[in-house]
Image (cartoon, rainbow, N blue to C red):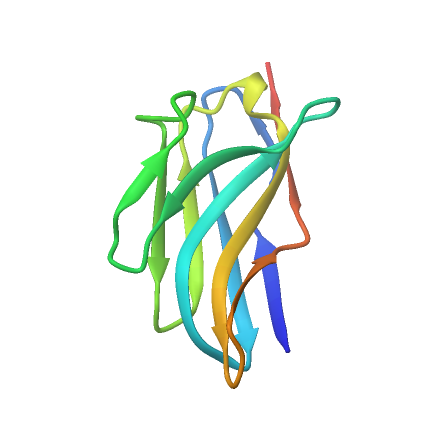
Length: 120
């Protein structure tokens, strides 16, 4: 059984910063790609950033230069540092981890979501 716990969301003024965390626990053998996605009201869920197990990163154009994704393999945790936040960054942010569990194959697991609200 795998559990993902997100933290770090909140309300911030435009130009401010937040750091989101997503920690995995349970019967985990390995974690492949980790990523952050977001969904604003009335919109589809979209990619924010991903990081592979080798450390390669990928960002949505809308967050390049402002957001930084990182991972701590020992802690089974992925982070996203969000700087220069804009009102259009307001959304529920979800982490997604590609996890290989003990005795099973690899599946995608999603966090519960954390609200980020940026006021103008």
